[in-house]
Length: 143
Image (cartoon, rainbow, N blue to C red):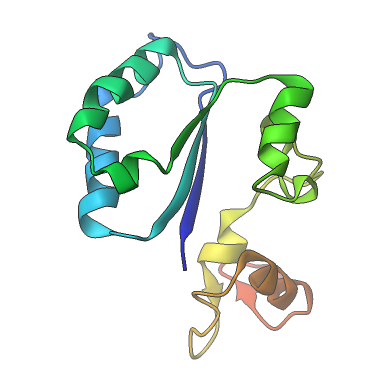
């Protein structure tokens, strides 16, 4: 199983951007502690300084990891075309050029409570089906 990251820097600038050390440590963590678990990382609307930092750092990142990072700078229809190559746009939020009407709720997929815990490692759509049919209760769910 692979992890896909979608990271949006919409409305992010120099004044409110996380420190570059956080970006560096995140890349190192993925490379060193989760080798071969990263499928793709989509960096949406990255400030120019982050793109420049990544380009400088990429010389020190394993090429297999480096090639998994995609900086998405297109807008509108061009972005939708690019994202549709990797995702079903019906499951993405509008921020990523998707058509999902409900915002992503990680609690459904990360904190599903089941006695044997066998829902972990399932694909997104398999987990969603389990939540929809009541097989899995989300932590803190109201009856």
